[in-house]
Image: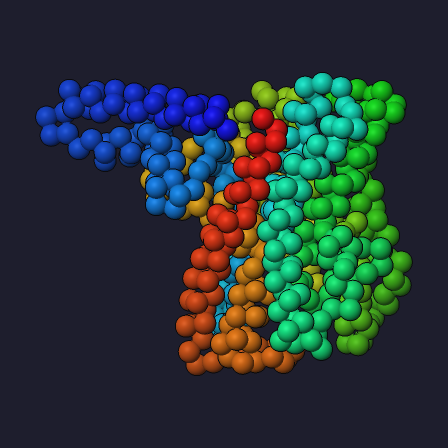
Length: 441
């Protein structure tokens, strides 16, 4: 801990020296110096310094100096899309019609981004030394210290609240949420803590994919580079085939009636959209991107990456407006792959965008930091338990009907989501991350 503090003080001293040098330079070259405006507008280094100081002083938050702003943008877009979609529960139909065309699959972005970040960590670990079971266990410990504490806090809150306020709605298989098996092995996503479906997919990825990679390296003594590539391509191929198999094994008629369409849509939601195995390939696209970034850095840093960014944006638009029928094969088999591929194409440009564009872009990093807590609490905690049930006294399972003063509920949703998420980040996420890093040191 003492070494870490000394290192931070040393880094701050270096930054102050650089800042002082720039101030002197501006003062000597301008008759009417406007020091801060000049520096912050044109100097990316000083912008990064300002962002770090602002977060630490105003919000008492610390950010890593190697944090990538482009990835923060993707994370910000992803959480904003998720929250915007959920917030429409509180809005009238007229507002939904305006907003819906601009909504995109934020969870798909999260999946690929998670794969990219975790894939990068795995590659660094495996290339430092030989793969070992102790290294695998250490990887799991570090990952779970990041994801489990705040998840378990929110889960316990919802279980206690439901048990006390709505005991008749207490989930009979509540224990499944502690092992992330509520939407796997034949079980379907429950209404209770519904947004946890995506966390199950990520946690099963953290458990199974590293085990597969480490196991192959330890048992078969294969090369790291070839093994990781083979696992990536194998899982992407098998999961895509599995979605294809699930879709066509149902035996959907060529000329269905409305009841058959509804039944088929229920099957697709339960067995493909919100299941663990049919969605694992999304995260593997991120791992594949990390593989290219690690082993082929020249490819990853090419100027034409901007073209790939535009291609990725185009694919996102295409999957949004040309997905066909909601129960069609494109929407349920190929659209998940295209969404993942879109984010995959965007990563080279965004991952090389190291710094923000000015002092106000600090808000992107702020929301990126608290995005995990925002995802966990925005729907069941804020919308359901606080606004719908506590404020409006509506404890029914029926669809929530917005009132004439819906805009008050809507504003309160955003205010509470941000405030509670900030508190959870500061009191739960940060302490456990520090404990994790302390153990590593």
